[in-house]
Image (spheres, helix red, strand yellow):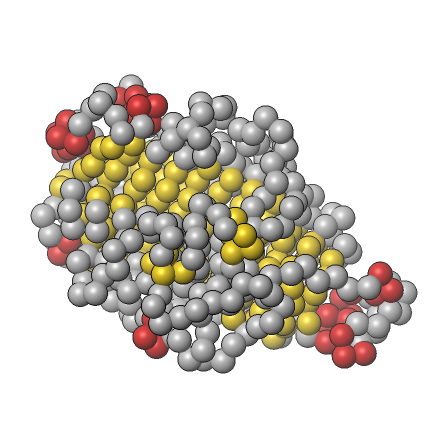
Length: 459
């Protein structure tokens, strides 16, 4: 969050068409007429017209097909929207779409590795661009650290949060979200996947967000526990946590495009705050993260100046990051800032253990605090916390992690990420136990459903 505009000298994105569009009440179960003259229930109208628009306030189950998302679409009134595997949902290029699932409603988008569900731009190949549409917003009843019921950003004006830890907003599996991220207002954007107060009853697994004009994933509070998340070529932050998020995420990948980054803010692998002003409101933001592989620009020719830190723990946040690989970020690797954040690391409420650490400059960086310095952090990481610092990204010995066309994050034989060479593995409660560091071991779970295309071949 807290961004301004897309930083690309080759593109200009227009956001003025970001409007909420509603279908007439006559479409509610009474033979109403929808787009292109289709009649019947909402489900019948959408299936016939192939247009998803307005408010969905009754259960709708869409068969496999291609649909156009037109304007801000709200799923509410405890409705369930189900999208079949293999479907493609493209945004209208004028009335830019966004899919908002409000509290007590659910979205079931259950693709497969062979038949993923794709949310993408409605423009033709070669003209598609970040910010062509909004993204997916899930709003639940799980806790936040706000004293009053918060409103989700992005010009949506919908509430989220509550007291239901295990709240269920549905299921997203084998889903790709491409070219999302419109800015409704300055500092108020829609991300690829936004989760506001989403509970642990929600299933988010095998999701790829590509060329988003804001964050790939942002979690405002909540307790959801995703797995297998990919952020590819994000403008701003790949994983952003705020307002008391306390879930677990295992198996995450960040791959940055050196020639694409936000022009108004700095792009990080992780940005994490307790809140925007650094209060100690409870529950504290404390993501527990394991088995991530972060791949920054790694000093590539033409790298834009706003590529920033691998991790940016700030504003009184707590954190856990373990069994992970940090490579190639421009201005810092393991980074944190503020006295409150530093104190939580010093006293063990936050931890950074069993990681492989590299950055183009400053693999360890501490800002805005005098409680601890980078040299002490490095010595602690390399000793008690079993981290290994690498002078070159190649020392991680991954197959081909920086290739924007066909990345391969698997460790080579002899890699320090493998079981025979890693110092140890920290087995976090309720996480899958692995015999490797990083997101990928001997099985490449990205095969079959992901898509990697660098900027030069996209728009």
